[in-house]
Image 1 (cartoon, rainbow over the protein chains, first blue to last red):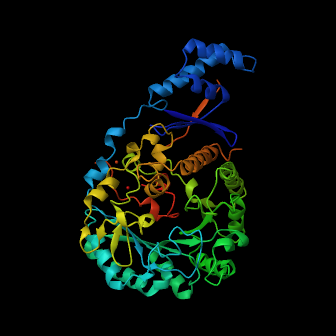
Image 2: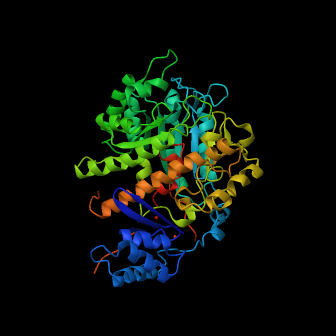
Length: 461
Length: 39
């Protein structure tokens, strides 16, 4: 299977199952499109009819181009068959029972009242709660006990607003650091915050202990303050931006993500990216809102072409700023074509419900943070472990080859079947597909690959 | 000779499992395994 597309002035061909990426001219682009459907003679005739009047395009040249395509096919770089399906699920079978990452919900409460919040203002459709040190300590012990031979363990402090329980966050990090040497583990901590409670103590702590911090900022002041308000209805933009700037400067401008949400109110999110850049932030992530379809913030079909165009314009902006010596990163465009995840990881999925779980303030285990509050997905707790193996089994069997809609999609080895929570909320099944999200993902991958081609070509466009 | 096709230079017991869990990295809402790095 191949995927052909034209973007940024390039003709790009991705060989889906080898991962090979080709930049081709118009002749090869057309020829590759016909290669599997027509005979050599018919293709050569059609190409000569179309390009015969073009300089240098002789019958010999057309034949040579055809032979080059055949050579690439024979060397496993075009039209490569999919041989990965039998391997799907093997990685999870082999690592059954191993947990390597936890999302610790240290606070089911928040000091903001964002109406678009998937976690219902941090309460996850339940009551307000704060994780105790004892529950958090037990969660870390659970992680170490169930991590098998994994050395790298990840803990994200999440909420709600995790800084509303900052002392417990600090104490849990200290406990993990105390245990990691004897346990032979390497803890990687991250923290997601709305910024209101950032002070010098928080900055010092984060820069010492957090390998990454995720900072919530939606971009333009009027966009941000539309949804991100406190309980008195006051916007938060003016209060948090100086705090974020101070924290990022103290981190040397690295190892953070300015994470925005775009909604029906701002499908033109590139303006928000530009605002972040103007504020001095360069590590950026802008995500589509996750909410019920009838929510006023929900993206609509009318928004889709606008959003897709914004992704293309964003890629062009990245290239132009790179040429000017003012680069920035966008999370979804950062694909490493020489050191990315191996095929075994790609066909296994994100690990939710198996190697990755969320822990509630009272110690219950859920497949991931987006399932918290959905009682039927509760897997167990940090004292007894997984007590509902059937539910966990559904997640263990959930991979890209378990989703019928994914089998013919060119991007399946990049999204790995996508987000189980998004699929569940869109279709009622974790093996479903969230089609709107798929369209956005495919466009992001097209842009990311185009950027790689442009850089290889020396800047492109 | 015309160059019709330029191929980019790109690149595991079935995987070690040490790579970062994708949803822990940035967005927490739209998984991006392709954005992770490998050992």
